[in-house]
Length: 517
Image (tube, rainbow, N blue to C red; front, side, top):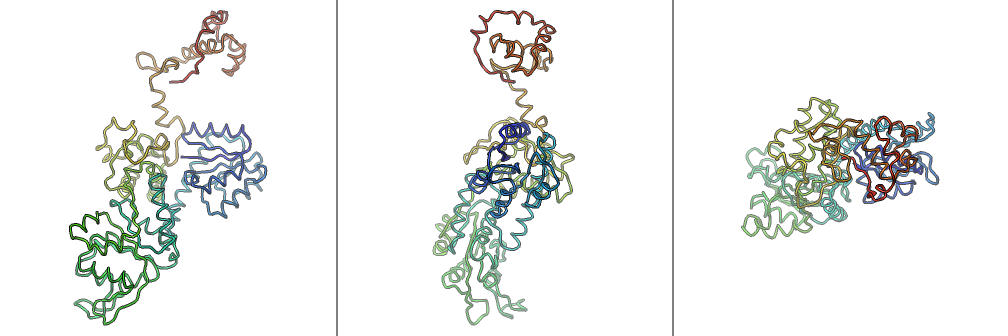
C-alpha cells in the first residue's frame, strides 16, 4: 500500500519514510501542498491509500490542503501531524476532514496504529458509499476498486461511453464485474437521476420473457390477474441493463430488436404500442459472434447491441487488483462478522495470485468471506484458505505468478488489510533466510542456526575497519558509537591486531557496501 508523506522538513520526511518502509508500506514523499494536490487529483492519485500531512508548511498549509481535497471530492484518508499539539489544532484538523492527528516526532507504534485505523475506516466508508450509490443509482467510476492497468483502460472506455447515450455491450467472464461497469456508466451519465433497471435474461422463464420485458394487460393470458408495465416502461428515461443477453430465446430477440429500433414496446394483449425512452446497456459471457454464425443469435440484433463494446478482463489477468480487493472484502466481512482482522499475509496473497480464479471476483469475494469466518485470530494466512491451497503448488507461493496480463505490484510483498509490524512481515523472514552473497554478512552458521551476536559484532567491526581503511574515527562514526567504546570492543573481542594493522591490505580491498543477508 502506498502512503503519501507531505512535509517541508526533510529530516522528518526521512524518519517517516524509514518507519513506513520498515512497516511494509510504500512511501511517497512530497515537500509542499500544491504538489500533493496535483498528485492526488491526477491519474496516479488512485494508488495512494493514505496521506500523512504536515499542518505547518509555507504557501499552502495542511488545513488548506484538507479544504482543497474536500472541494475536489477526493476521499483519501488523511493523518495530520505537527510539532504543536494544541487542542485548537486538533479540532481544526478534524473539522477539516482529517481522520487522525499525531504530534511530532511520532513513534513507530503510534504511527502504525494510526495507519491501521485510517485504512480500516477508509475501507468501511468506501463500502458504505458504494452501497449507498448503488441503491440510489449514482454509482460512479470512483467506486470501482482497481489498481490494474488493464482495468484502467476499461474504465477510460466506460467513461467515454457514459458521456453519450450510445448502446454498450459489456463482455467478460462470469463474475468479473460487468454489472458494476454498467451501473457506473449509468451513474456517471445524464440519466443518473432516472431508473437503472437490471434484467437477467438467463433467469427468466421462456414463456414469460415477453411479459417481463414488455409488459402485459390484465387477462391477456392465464394467470394475468392484473396489468404489468414491463421492464422497458419501468426504465423509461433511464437505463435498461440486459444481463446475459445472449440467453434470450429467438422470439424475444425479434421483439427486442423492434423495441430498440422503434423506441416503443407492445405489451402482451395490448391493442396499441407504448413509447419508451431507454438507454440499452447489455452484457454477456458468451461469444456472441460465434452464436451469430451458429444461428443462435440474430445478426441484426447483435449489431444493434454491439455498437460500443467493452471487454472486462478476468481476474487472473489483473493480479494487481487482488490486494485492493482483498482489503475491501476483508474490511466489509470483518465488520459484518464482528471480527478484528488486522492483515492478510504476503504469503497468502502470493497464493491468491497464483490461483486461476475461474469464478473471478465473485469467487474471490466468497473465498475471503469464508476466510474471515474461519479466522481464529487477527491474521488471515494460508490456513484460512484450505480450498485454494489444495489447488496451488507450494513451490509456486514464493514465485511471481505467471500471468500474461500484467506484472505484480509491490503490494504482493507486503501484508494487506492493516499491515503488521516489520518483524511480523512474512517477507522479513524470507529476506533473513536468504543465502548470503560474497559481500554479505551471513546470519546463519553451517548448521543452519543463528550465529552468536558477539561473533556478528566482531565480523562487522572488522569489515568496517577494512572498508574505511583503518580510519578509526570514521569507523566509530559510521557504527554510531564513541571512539573509546570502539577501542573497548576491540579489546573485548580480541581484535587489537586490527587496530594497529597497516593499511596496505585495506587499501587493496574492494570498497563494497555490506548487505545483511
